[in-house]
Amino acid sequence: MRSDRWTAVTESSFPWEREALEFLRGHLPDHEPWRAWSNFEFIDDQGRVNEVDLLVLGPRGLFLVEIKSRPSTVEGDNHSWIWTNEGRKYTGDNPLLLANRKAKRLASLLRQQEAIGKSKARAPYVLEVVFLSKVRPPLKLAGGVLARVFLRGRPGQDRDNGIIQALTVGLEDAFPHGASVDANAARAIGRAIHQAGIRPSLRDRRVGDYELHEVIGEGEGYQDFAAKHVSQGSRRRVRLYAYAQATSRRLGSG
Image (cartoon, rainbow, N blue to C red; front, top):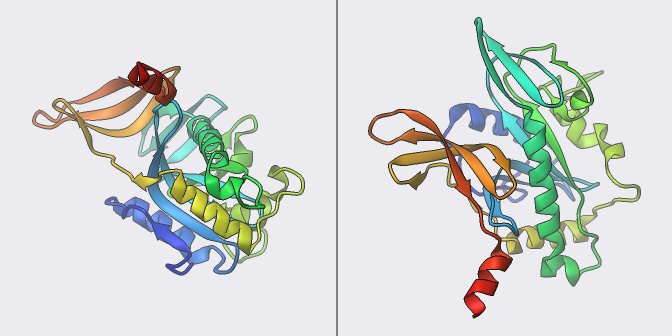
């Protein structure tokens, strides 16, 4: 995909993430209506930070692609996953859960933008998927998780069941009936994404003596970040409480 279709909002500082993004860029279609935006964040209506690894626009709508580049095997269910590499195990939440919430928040934000309201384009549907760029097959995931989680596969070969096949043709039925994006709609959606206030991803925020990294959990009104003490190197889970923008406006109007 050429640079005029692929917008790197932030250049990744992680070689494994850059490699995964280059793999996707090298295999995605390079014609209308395809577009992509990598490594950005947006603030939703409740003041929450939402980091996006890759957003891909295709003929049916938008894919929010969550990239995980942990070399391992994976097993789990709809709630938690176990990542195993060289005998070491790590247990974490199913990343689809957070990706789903991001997708819904982004869809809601885009519907509010002038570019959508003034054009004939429908507000795009945003579908979440997870790309496990370094995971070794087979995936041992129960429930409906496998329908939205993909490995590299074999792009361009028969019986490919990887991420490229999913983004280009494999998930068409997951979009609402009649969803369609042509060149004009793609330009309107691109303007809406810009109007939504996407910005470079700030993965190393500071709170006191801690650097905040990725979001590792969230609940009603708060987000948990992986954090590292800048001088001691100790790692912690830091919770930040969000505030609704609407609330802040009401407080400021008095």
